[in-house]
Image 1 (tube, helix red, strand yellow):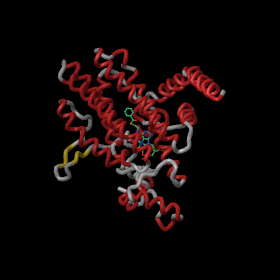
Image 2: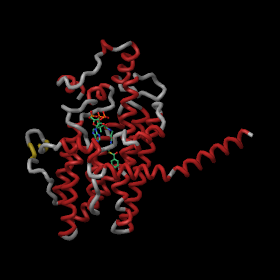
Image 3: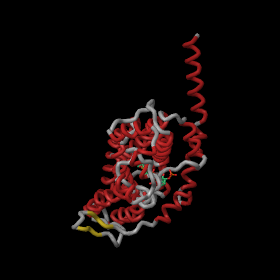
Length: 328
Ligand code: BYC
C-alpha cells in the first residue's frame, strides 16, 4: 500500500536520505516489525499522529454508545436488552483502553475529553446518524461493528505496542457485537413482512454511511502515506472499504435484502464487487458538524461530563484522603 501511495504521488513522506540518524534508526525498527513502546524515542510527528488517531478512536467508542443507548429501554425482549446493554458497556470499556493507550504518549485524558466536549476533536462520522427503529440495532451491529472489525483487525499489528495490544481485546468484543447485529437482522428477515421491511429500511439508511466510515478515498486521504510508512495503517481506506463490500453483500443476499446501490455488480474477473459512487459531500458535511445528530451527540456528552463532576471530585477526595492516611 505504501509503495502505491508514494507512486501516485499523493502525500509525500520523508525519504530515508532526508531523515536524521535517530529517525532512520526508528524507521529501520518499524520496517523490521519491532513494536515501538511508550518510553522509546519516536519522532514528534509519529507521536502526534498516534495521539490524533487513538483519541479520535476513543471518542468514537464513547460517542458510539449513544445511538444504541437510545434503544435500551425499548428492546423487544429481556434477552435482547441484556445483549444490547452488554455491547454498550463494551464500547465504554474500549473507550477507556484507548484513552489509556493515548495517555502513554504524554497527553492527559482530561485534555482529550475537553477537546471532544468543545467540539474540537473528531469522532467517527457514523455516530451522527439517528437510530430510528429497532432494526437499526441490527444494522448498526452488522454494518458498523462489522466495518469497525475490518478496520481494526490490522491495527492489532500496528507499530505502536500499547495501541496494538488494546486492539486485540477490542476486536474480540467487536466480533460478538457484529454477530448480535446480524442475529437481529436474521430474526427480522425471518419474521413478518413488516419486520422484513424494517430490516430493509435500516439497511437502506446505514449502507452508505457505513462505507464512509473507512474515510476519504485514497486519492483524498491526507494522512495515509505517512501512516503507512510508520505501519500505523497497514491497508488503505479504499482497500478496507472494498473488503467490507465483498464480505457484506453475500450476507445481505442471505438475509434476502437488497443493497441500496443500483450500480453494485460482481466482477468475476477481479473477484470483487464494483459499487456506485459515494456521496462525499455528505461525508464532509457530517465532518463539519452538520450531520443529522452532531449537535445532539455533543450536547449529550457535555451533559454527561458535567453531571459526573461530583463523582470525579468524590473519587479524587477519597484518593487524597487515603494517601494522607498512608503517609501519616
Ligand atoms: N469520521 O487522511 P485520512 C468504532 C478524518 S468505529 C470522521 O484518511 P486517517 C465503533 C480523518 O481523521 C470508528 N472523520 O485520515 C464501532 C482526517 O482528519 P484529521 C472509529 C474521519 O487518520 C462500533 C481526515 O478525515 N474507528 O469506534 O489516515 C461501535 C482525512 O482522513 C473519518 C477508528 O477510529 C470518519 N469516518 O484515516 C462503537 C479506527 N474518516 O484527523 C464504536 C482508527 C476519516 O487529519 N482510525 N476522517 O483532522 C483509523 O483507522 C483512521 O484514523 C481512519 C482515517 C481510517 C478513520
